[in-house]
Amino acid sequence: MAQVPQANLDNPNTLPALAPIGAEVNDGDVNVEPELEVATGSESDSALGDEVSKYTASLTSSIEKFITENGRRYHSHRDEAYIMPNDDSELDRLDLMHQLLRIVMKEKLHLAPLDTTKPVRILDVGTGTGIWAVEMGDQYPLAEILGTDLSPTQSTWWVKFFEIRFRSSDWCRVPPNVKFEIDDVEEEWTFTQPFDYIHSRYMVGSIRNWPRLIAQSYNHVVPGGWVEYHDFDARYYSEDGSLVKDSPIDSWVTTWMQASNDAGRDPQPGPKLFGWLQEAGFINLKQERYRIPVGPWPKDNHLKMAGAWNLVQLEDGLEGLTLRLYTQFLGWTTDEIQVLLAKVRRDLQNPRIHVMYDL
Image (cartoon, rainbow, N blue to C red):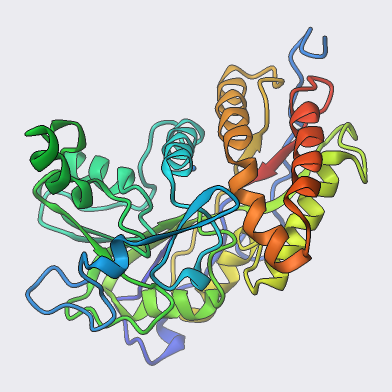
């Protein structure tokens, strides 16, 4: 997370020194974390006023229209801008990812020190299903929260349909202080009022120009306001050597990262966020690294639970993560993809492979 300075924004000499969590201001040495222990026996994720962005689309027939590729549904509004499906399977997986990140962050929805005793304006960039925005709206009823996304996959888009079809929309209730809009965050932001807090997470593989995105965040936060980015380094690794080079998991991750780069989307934004935020002019930067295991192999109960959730969401999401990237950018056939993914799923279930990645 990072803060916009309250001092003279044009004078960098007025900004305080920066240091990531776990580092000394003067020498920059980062604490070395101990290797994760394996459990004994384990081896057998607009403006809120009247004027809206000219890039913001309403719920028109063009937005409601979807396209199908290889048996998966994708959004049609600027379909080249996003490589993941938006069908029910993927939306369920995104909600699983939300629960996983809550576990990883020990049930915290945010880390920034928000003053929620007064009305604050919050922007959720790439809101997905909108579950984070909805939970924030419940937790902070004085806040005004806006979630933006390319696809109309948030609860409010479906409220009217269910009210007409089933005379009830209780299951997709959205707090009155939460709104959603269709928007492309990589276009020019035209919000008419700044935000007190901008939040973004799990945008790996989605953004072409991260520095520009972060610069736009800087320009749309009030002086003294906060931004918070949570994102991944997609490189999978093991600390004990159990993930072997050229194994199915390693091969899948390597080719996925190659395809993501070919598509112009950085597959490893997480470790670069600190530098991008610093370059944009933010101050009071704090950086946390979370190791997220895949599978319930860690000895630590908290990490064991995170690993179990992560395994479920990853197995559910392998196909959606892979199909469009591999067919469009690597020239693979769907049969070739399914053969690889079958091997990956087999290895993900192997308790002797202690794989993880970083948030």
